[in-house]
Length: 178
Length: 269
Image 1: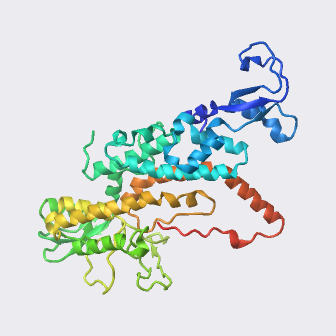
Image 2: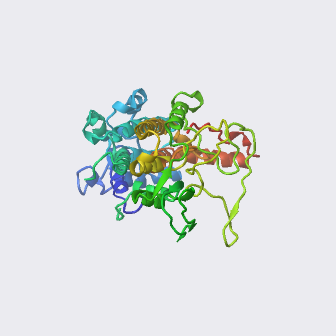
Image 3: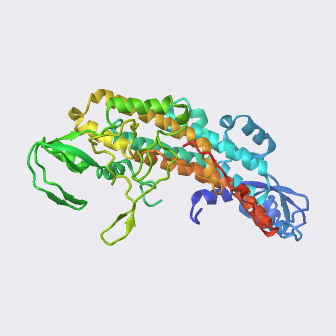
């Protein structure tokens, strides 16, 4: 993850539900009331980078400004759906950077089970991606529905698998170079 | 990414490397010995067989100055035997057929023996162990040890394809050979794809996945995808790995690390 990595920058912008523990004057802008104060107990979706910073007190053990919650993309409901069948879930609709976001969230929460569910999901879907990537028709076959639901990490995986399969086919003379 | 090519090496580059494999030829014309960068090539005297690098052999073949003797594995009989091992043999259901033994490595039949590799020495005296393409894996042997099963060398796909392209009239039944090569390739591609299931062992600490018997082109093709999957799994499992390490450090601090938790992975690659 480099400083200029556009995907990690975009992951930083994913929203995370936060609850304010203290009253903060002047932060009303987050809620849409510029110049106002923000009340204790307010729930707002904050971007990952901001929520992480504000909750840092929680990890140091001092009084915290906000408590974080698991985002809806990683809720119990989604986890159950992923356990049932990883291939039918539209990850892109949940979060465009689903895996990079869950990676960051897992740094903040201790969720052993979620790690297992997500690794299993990634593996199952990677196998399906490999199948689709070796299809010479590319993303135009019957897998359109599944491929549309890939998150950014999986799209890159698809791209690299598809390109290397194509390169090899071109070398073997089975496909024409465009 | 500023650099337009993906990581790893491209198929043309892999086949370029494979052209350094030595093959046996039967010259039709005399030719004086050549001083090549890879070492001197013997002079060609017509009825006598010589081993030359594949690229030179292909060049001579195209000029009709030589015939290439196909390596013993590039024969319909050997290939269909290997295909049988890949598809029927229950031991290799999810694994690749064994590669030819390296020098000093005991052959498959006497498995219990310890390998005794003898190093070779560079002109400066440095030790090295030769690896493909610098092993005589594609040279025709005069006497094959009886009962030695045929095996696919590291550059099987590249050498096979190039010989089929340029020297198909020197092969035994080229159409059948071509069909078998294609079939082998499909079977093995399917194995690589189904191998995704064991990849999380490579992502966790201390694990690994054996790629014994996988050819150069297959590695080149799978490189991007496999490393992508392993990387993704590693990132997802990072927090768990962190917790595991902390636990281990704690155990160590509390007296002794027991060696039982060394991962014993049975990889079927």
